Image (cartoon, rainbow, N blue to C red; front, side, top):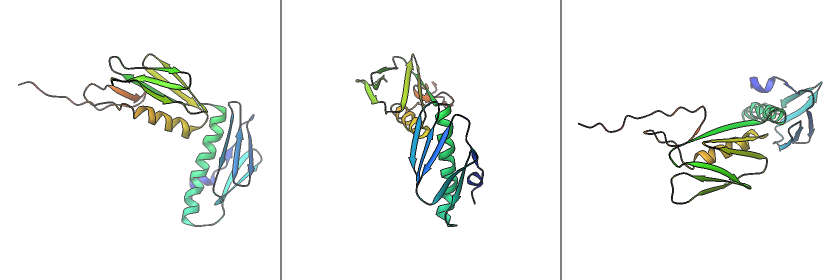
Length: 177
């Protein structure tokens, strides 16, 4: 049984949640998110709260119950307050800038790396900090992971792209005799 799925999700004022079949639509001050779910879990809006109930008492359905509750909760949070990830670029000559709908980065390679910014996300690049924000937590996390994979931080000098709260375990390096 899911402890997360059993709890009703409160819908804040100014946010509207509509359920039509397997499609959940959430509208708020920051935008609108629509997501289609499998019919294993039933969504219901009652007295300003979103309730989820599994249709069958099977292992797979009970596993989806908590997952769908987390997805619905993140959708409600995202349309009210934007989700945000910050990436720090460390290294001499490493920089990033936004040109149109692309993030252009110089990361020590012989060429520039260009990454297309997906719709629904806003990216700001200033000096050595990239800020990625949007209403969809999955899209923000996926794009920030994609950008970080372009140049992962190395353990000797810490050069590369890392999250702002990430700690890089440093290695000592070679010793001279």
